[in-house]
Amino acid sequence: GDAGCQALAATAPRLPELRRVEVWSNRVRDRGALALAGALATSCPHLEVVCAGVNWLSHAGLVGVAKRLGEEGRCPRLRELDVEQCWALDRRALADDMRRELGPGVEVEVGSQALGQLRLLALGIGLPAAGAACA
Image (cartoon, rainbow, N blue to C red; front, side):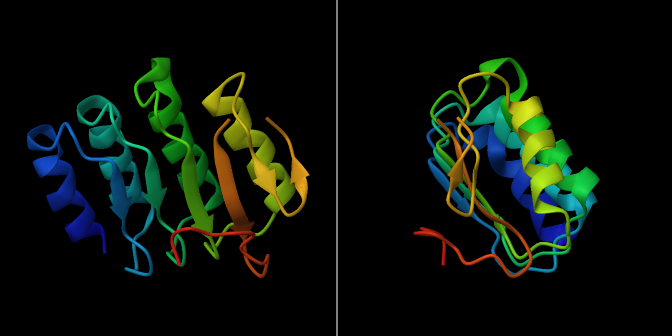
């Protein structure tokens, strides 16, 4: 949950070579996800994959995660952020908002429509994970 994400966030500065983080199905809420995303963005430049699906994240929380990971190219190698089956219900609006925060040249995939280099796989509830690498 949030406590685990906050503990991982505290260790992130000692993990600069970290490439993959999985907090899949851990009852993570916005507070924990935002703390972890902020720490990863400032400490882990080699980060490639974040799997945070099946958690209790709101639309605002998911947009905040995207904003923190996308700030000033802090995670230049990030290619996948999997937030499948989180609580955000409006997948289209969520994808648009996350794309806006991640900036130009970022690929957002919602179902079969590709919208731009980072894939946000299976956003929202009930959308099948197209090749979800985090499952």
